[in-house]
Amino acid sequence: MTERWCIPPAHNAAFVAAMEDVVGVYHRPPDPRFPLVCFDEAGKELTTDARPSVSTAPGQPARIDVEYVRHGSANLFLWTAPHLGRREVTVTRQRTAVDWAQAMRRLVDEAFPDAERVVLVLDNLNTHAPGSLYKAFPPAEARRILDRLELHYTPKHGSWLNVAECELSVLARQCLARRIPDDATLAREVAAWAAHRNAAQVGVDWQFTTADARITLRHLYPIPPLGT
Image (cartoon, rainbow, N blue to C red; front, side, top):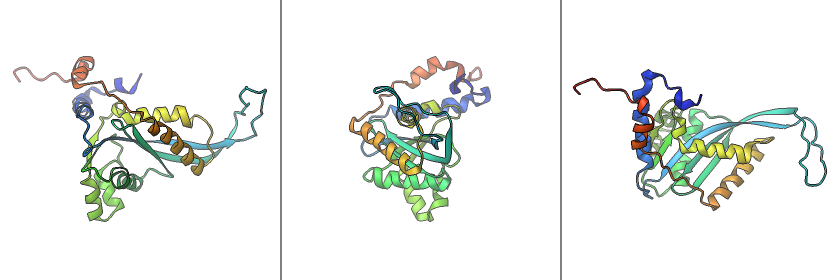
């Protein structure tokens, strides 16, 4: 059963309210003053082969032993701007509130320095909150960054509404589905992957609308009392 069908009935109203907010954001006309950005994160286990791989005949893949050696794990912060065909992946050791806050400062100051406000779609992870900025920076700096962000949260059990989750899925298939030994190698590999997709300006044309949701997901919409 997929995540979208595991919504507890008591959460339906909150789910559809947040869903309609995010879907509405996706259908705003693109505006360079207010770029749409979707943000998510994922982990990657760092591993090496326990034994050297064995080469086979030309044109045949090498034989890789199923055993491997763990070298810890890393976190990947990913943002993507679906209207612009841009994305960036940052490797960190952790994904604490301070790590997220630093990612937000890079987003507004380095990725979109000329934007009035970045319209940001992200999930409800507890670190994805304004308070995290105040944990990481002095109050004036935290407020400055927060004033450059317009936050929109996907509903619980609704991470499929985040375009960044789709981008992470592509990253996992195209780049991460193999053994990567350390942070430095991981950073090089994800940077090369992002540069290739950015050069091709791979974007997303979001088609799902609020009208679609009210038909296909009508079972999630609470029924108002009679007479309202």
